[in-house]
Image (cartoon, rainbow, N blue to C red; front, side, top):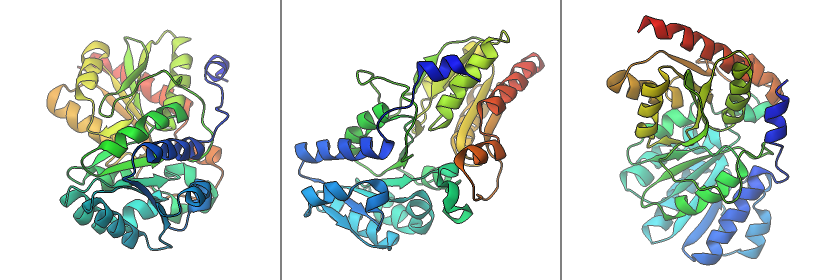
Length: 324
């Protein structure tokens, strides 16, 4: 058990979806251009109260995600700043062409919100498990892709996303998460957050895997392995400066993501390091598999996303340093 880490980062009293809705409402109060669209998931997102307060700026488009994105793009073209939400599978796969053409190609400032990423789909099952949404959206030119790790970060990122002059994708975990940051902490899209220091290796994580990375770092420290932990909450554009420093100063990299190892954070990091500064690297993530039905804790173990798996991959990466 990682008692020290769990005591240092207790579970937040506010769900991520509540933090999102509160941050969005605050933005709407300040900027009349901001509107919200939803594909018949207003209750799961917790946005019903916002709809009642702003009935002319919150729109339920029904179960027609592609049409919702087209509608959002049209609103953006007319000067609005839409946030368009559905479950991650539908926000990415089902509406991909509309995102690519109407949002990215047209450079329209639409923030696409995909909730229940990866194993967070839990009992909804394999058809609802977005294990490839980062890959899909990262491949769209002009797209900004972020995945916050706690509510404090989420609150800070929503206003920034509202002001971007292009499309973005917000990968949103809806439930409670450990509180990793404080309200006074600052975050900038495109800049990673260094949250643990070490010289033996660096763990680069995003989303729910950041907390697992911190637990892994605690485990490894007791074994004499000191690791740096980077919260790479912006998957695109990647913080290449911080990543280069990690590779040069620690000599080994491990990525951890609640996503397929193909096309997501691990791929982005590997692409950069392979071209610029190759070092031993290991990737923690879903190994090119479809999703399954089950509690999230079971799914994390099933797909190798826990702190134990991250620690093991880190030990392997450190052992490989002598090969280079």
